[in-house]
Length: 184
Image (tube, rainbow, N blue to C red; front, top):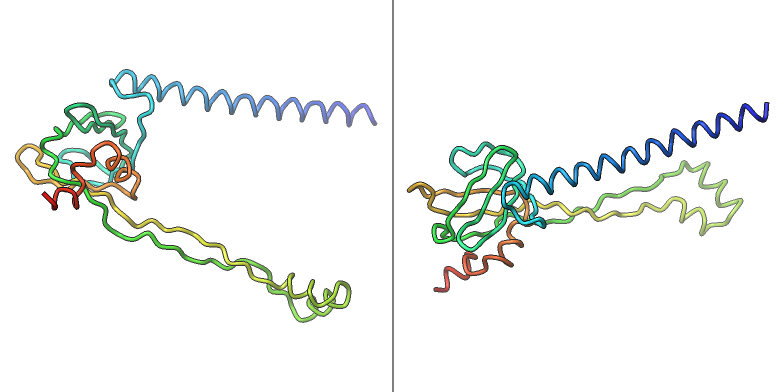
C-alpha cells in the first residue's frame, strides 16, 4: 500500500514538473516570437504595445499596436500592418478623461450567534476584528490618449486607451504635448 502511494506521489510530482517547465517554455517561445517580430519590422527591441481604439484611416480597431518614435516618424505596428506618422504632421497629443479610485468593501458579516460565540471564546476585540469590513482601493483609468495629426490631408484624432502612450510621448516627443504647443 505504501509503495502505491509513493508511486502515485512520484507520478503527480513528475506531471507537475513537466507542466511547469512546458509552461515556462511556452512563455520563452512567445517572448522570442515577439522579439523576432519586432526585429523583422525594424522596431526597437524594448518597444511596447498600447491599446489602440480608433481614428487612424484604414486601421481597424480596437487592437494592440507597438508604438515607437524614430528620427522622422511615430511608428504604429499591428500584427498585420505598419503605419508611419511623420513627426511634422503631428499637431499635438493630449490626455482626456478621469483616473478615479473606488473603494470596494470586502469582509465577513457574521451572524449574531457567530459573533457571540467568537466573543465568548476569544473576547470582544476578536469578535470586532472578525466582523471588520476591509476597504480595498481600486483604480479605474477612464483616460484616453489622443493624437491629433494630418494624415493624407485629413485632420485625424487617433485614440488610445489609458495614459500609457501619453507617458511614452511625454518622454519621447515632449514638444508636441498640447499645453506645450498652445504656449507657442
